[in-house]
Every structure is written in C-alpha cells, then in structure tokens.
Image (cartoon, rainbow over all chains, first blue to last red; front, side, top):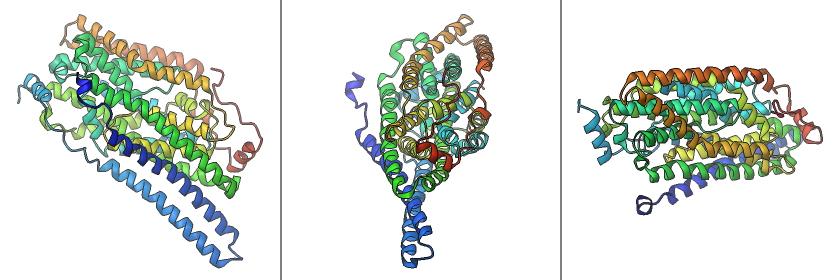
Length: 104
Length: 387
C-alpha cells in the first residue's frame, strides 16, 4: 500500500540529475579537449599569425572558465544542498524519542 | 568505535573509486594519488550532512532502533557490513560499502523484529532505484564523453591530447575524492547519529551530527584511504577495461558529475557503482576498446549479492549477540571479537596474493608511450589478470 501511495521515483530530481551529469560530465570533457586544442594551435601559430593566436588563446580561456565554473558549481552544490537543513519531525521519530530518551 | 572502523574499511575499500583510473594511466603515482584522495576525503566529509540525514531515517522503522537493544542491532549491522566489505576486498571486487551497511541494518532488523519493520518504499526509492540508475547514467555520460574526447584527439594530435588529459585527470580525480568524502563519510555519520538517537543523546526532532562525529568519521575515512585498497584499485583501473588518459578523464568527470548531482538531491548512492559505471562507459566509448566482460559479470554479481549477503551477516551477528541478551554488552563484545578474528584471517589470506602500490605504478608510461601504444603497441598485462 505504501508503495502505491507515494511515488518511488522522484522524476523531477532524476531528470535534473541526468541533465546536470550530462552537462558536467560530457561538457567538461569537450571543453577541456577544446582547451588543449586551442592551446596547441596557439603554440603552432605563435611566430606566424599573431591575430589567430589571440583568438585561440581567447577560445582556450573560455573553455578554461567553463571547466572551472563547473567545478566551482559542483563544490558549491555540495556545500549548499538545499535539503541539508535539519529534517522535519515525524510521528515515527517522535515515537523514537519518547521511547529512547528519558532526558526528553 | 565500530562505526568508525566501518568508515576505515570504507576508506581503503573505496579509495579505488576516485583514483583508480589516474593510477592506471600513470597520471599520478599510486601513493601520491592515495594521499591526495585521503586529504580530499577528509575535507569532503565536512562539507554537508544531507546524506547523513537520509541514512539515519527511512530504511527501517525508527522504534526498532530505540534504546540499548537498538544500539546492539546497529552494532550487529556494522559487523555484517564490515565482514562483507572485507570479503569483497579479498576477492578484489569493488562492491558498495553503503549497500553493505544498509544490508546489515536490514538483516539485523528482520531477525530482531520482523520483515515488516523494513520500510520497503524507503529502501526502493533511496537505495535500490539509485543503485540501478546511477551506474547507467554515469556509464552513458562517460561513453559520450570518451567518444567526444577521441574525436577531439584526432584534431589535437595524440601526444598533446594525452598529455592534456593526464593533467586533467589530476583535477577530476581530486573532485571525485572530494565528492566521495561528502557522500561516504556522511553515511557513517548517519549510523553514529542513529546510535546517538537510540541512546537518547540526540533528539530526533532536532537531528544534527555532532562535531566530534564529523571529525571521527572524516579522520577514519582519510586514514583508510591513505592505507589504500590496492587490490580494488587494480580491478577498477586495470581489469575492467584498458584505460587511457582520455578515458580516465571522461570516467572521472562523469562520476564526479553524477555523485555531486545525486548527492545534491539527497540520494545516498554508491560511489563504487557510479565510478564502475563510468569506467565501463569509458571502455565502451572508445572504438575497439576491450571491455573485460567476465570481470564486469563478477562485479555485477557482487553488487547484487551485497545487500542480501550483508543482511545475512548482520542477522547472524544479531543472533549471536542475542544469546547474551537483547541489550547485553557481552553479546556485542563477542561478535566484535569474532569479527576481528575473521578480519585477521582474511588479511592473512590476502597476503598470499598481495598487491601493493609498486605493482600498480604506471608513472613510467608517458603521454608519448601511451600514444605509441594506442597507435598499435601492446599494453602491459594488468596485475592479477589471471586471478
């Protein structure tokens, strides 16, 4: 009855997990690869094409910022979980306290 | 104390999660990787208590764990979990410490009370379902990531790309370590909080994790990590698939993303299963990569068996403890002693086919040699491949 009464899967949370994982996992790999690509190209054109080099360096900076941003967001998400506040009291926990804690 | 011991076994059992692929590709020396992971696990353990709150609530009915009988039950559960962790460590199988813990709680609860005291809904929604979806999501993300990385490598050039991804692996391994600390140390904090609630030291209406619990758990998991579970690192890094630096980076990035996202929403998932899914996905994402399905099958079997096996062990531990009385400390002492004997035996057995840090050191593999291997060379056979 309990299983039927409430959903087992939080579809909304699952969707967000999939989205965040894809963005973080695939996004960072691509951005990091592009960063390496742009840095490599910037090295290759160092002495010949000054303008092109600046473009490559700009591209690599954007990719680097993206990777860094994902890491910072990840750490921020760890530290600031919205539900990490103290959980609400329920009948079950109240019963536990009543049985377990003579100190009240 | 037993909960902290469990955290210690969790540390050395699950170190593999964060650093296995970095060690396998030679991006980090084994001892450096494990030391880095230990420090970040320590830091991660202080970051949030969301998962701790989830574990302490929702798996079994709270009244079962009330009073000193409840404490004995938690103790039996931990003994079951530690024993299963050591058995899987001996067989070099990266199983989930979290599921072992949950299995132990369930088994002891069923034997002590009845199966109806287990919250099926809570078990399905916070344990079984995340256990099913998390490795699949991580595997898919890692597969797409790896595929993309190798597409980019064609444009970048083999040596430069591999060099870049090796540097990237240091960062991604650090993030997985941090995420592991936020996830796994908190589970034991949850168990200790459970015991403190049962003892009446914490009012469950005002649930919190005391600072000394956080410090104890963080230190235990860091110490366990520092000692390093080389046997499981070998399985994760070398035996599932032949990992190259772009694959390792993709697997770690995917793992960190899934762990952090799931942890944010309070799903107490298994970091072991997530990272295993990531490593497997990275193997599938590379064209012509070899995935060792036999090892994958063994690992999947260990995953399926973990909750029932730990439940049986938790139940047996509780039965032995109950001989001395439901609330007796003597029972807990006896099962603690038996667990120590079993642990010693397993450690002795493991000495026969010992795997150490020096066996796994691949720091001599440079980006150049990795590129050569990728272009037609043959990789060195993994340690213990025949085991």
